[in-house]
Amino acid sequence: MTKKLLIMPFIAGAAFAFAAGVASATTLEDVKAKGFVQCGVNTGLLGFASPDDAGNWNGFDVDYCRAVAAAIFNDPKAVKFTPLSAKDRFTALQSGEVDMLARNTTWTMSRDTALGLTFAGVNYYDGQGFIVRKSLGVDSALQLSGASVCVQSGTTTELNLTDYFNANNMELNPVVFEPLAETEAAYDSGRCDAYTTDASGLYSTRLKLSNPDDHIILPEIISKEPLGPVVRQGDDQWFNIVKWVHFALLNAEELGVTQANVDEMKAGDNQEVKRLLGVDGTFGEGIGLANDWAANVIKAEGNYGEIFERNIGSGSNLQIARGLNALWTRGGIQYAPPIR
Image (cartoon, rainbow, N blue to C red; front, side, top):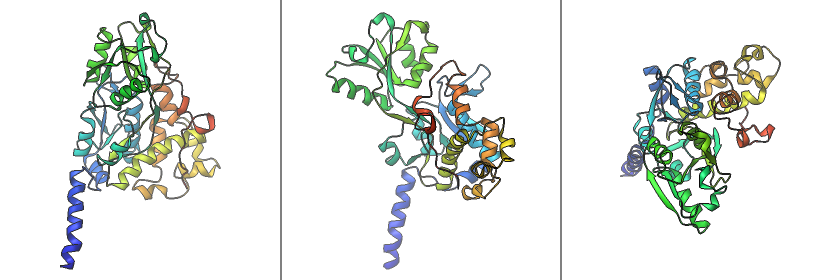
């Protein structure tokens, strides 16, 4: 009887864990066995994840996937991309169709607790905004009462939109679509007065509109949208790998380690740099990787600032300012624990 009492809760817990989509704690072994990371990304969001005419994926989130591949295989090309809609992204991760999500996904309590998923950090601090045609004659979201607003279903955007209009006693006429491309096309064709999504997405959307210069992004940010990579619960090793790849990219920028100087920095005297690059200590062993895993990541993709600038910052068409995503030493809130 005693044995039954001890065993039954374990079985029940295991069944719950399986139902919730918890990983089997063998993700790294599975990834190594197949020889690549399967990464869930957006179906097409310029600057974050989109394929070119030859089918090659590019973007901020894409580079995060490649960084994880570089940490494991010392090969940023050891990754395959699965484009996922907002509706399908969590099911794909829960079921094991993908090993991780890097898909402009907002960290919320329900997603972090009820879905059997874990966020591995915030790689982009965002907030929801609005884009409108200049001809609409408004310069504030507070002037949108009675306007029709295009919004994508299956996102935090819907609830934020309703909350904002209710809080300001404004009349809302939402026009809801599921696919991102359909939502953007509806706004571009004039079916809606405004379109709302994360501000980062608005910059991407404006580039795709028929006449980008005819549209403005309103100044209001109506929500907190901390975006970041996501993994399944239950596999601490895999969670730590994805999390510390993000932290390594931030630490590298803070310490001045770049794609161009990583080998030179290895030979320097800075102990923090030596620990980051695997010259001192055996920190890679703690997450099941080679000790130079972070050096391999930086050689392949650069540091956080380099990834940001070339995809969505000053070196890109989006021209998004760092803002909150600047390092804590430069007026932002991006901050990584030390490697020690």
